[in-house]
Length: 87
Image (cartoon, rainbow, N blue to C red; front, side, top):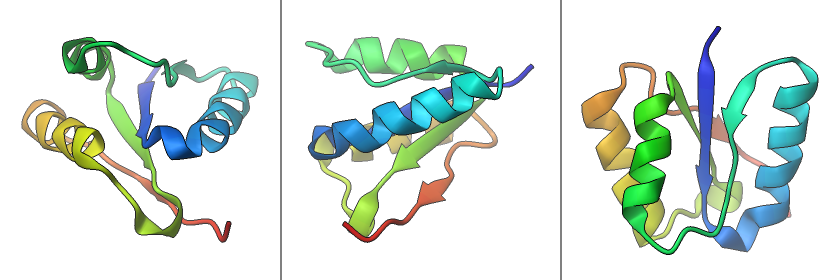
């Protein structure tokens, strides 16, 4: 079974939690958003995942999410999916 790491700006924390709930209801293992004190903890979640799902309403990603994407690109073949929402 594929494991999904959900990344995104904490400006969109609710959207990330909603996505986590939807994935879990479909029995998809996921590593959801947590307010980490270290970007290395985010990288640990990426290391455990097969897919990184970037939640980016309005196309916004900040510095930390950019680092997550770069790290995931080096580690994982299927590294990002996008969700566009009108907020």
